[in-house]
Image 1 (tube, rainbow, N blue to C red):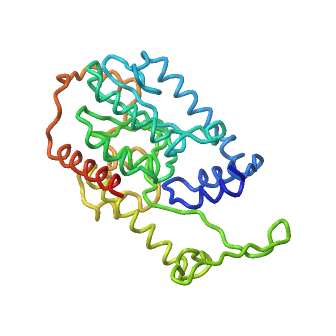
Image 2: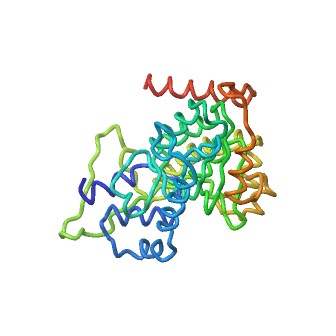
Image 3: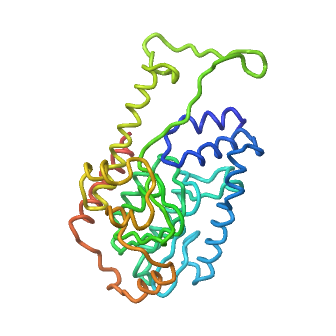
Length: 317
């Protein structure tokens, strides 16, 4: 994929991610490896932190048979969600570190079907990511028939919080942060000749005036924002259902697009407690549940029905 095609692909999809990470991902796509946006990530040690946590998780138990990233520790399947969240593997992995929804979904399914797993623990430190397939995986988490806990070691922002909100509980490190609920897209407009001295021009068919919206115009921004608002509504609806609250409460008290500290997140209902990873693993390991017995709470039943409906619609489409 050429540099421009890669950048176009990024800008063609909406994102639920912290802004500095989206800028860094675009810099990778442009092969601008000396970009200030990438330098910020190098300086704060994000990628090194993800790699260190991955190593700690893998050394804390035995690899869960059939999974790609999950580790089994005293009946607890530990699944990492580290770095930007992408639908599939791509060339940005070596630069940014990342989680793919494809792998996450597969590992969740493996953990759910393994009789030696009594609890599922998603260990999370992610700035968010692309929205493609995100709601489907969120629905999968909500419908799992084994207890699911999320432990936030650093950040659970945007797309990451979307996933976390579907777990049975969210526990945060005392210095962790969460939030950034909202949808964003990155775009550009031609303001002058390109590097080759040529100005690109898009011409669309007569009956498709909205195929090339002008992001610099009020009308173009309004139409783009309308699409983002529709996606945000799905995001907030999923969060409200997962956290057993109302959409109005999510809109008013879950940060309004900003981040919250662990203490503030717990007090507002975005998370359930503050603890340590080792303490959480030990606690879950002592909470054995009958194997192969599906939970039949109304939330799980509704989530399973919703997930089935989504997948049927996707197949029909």
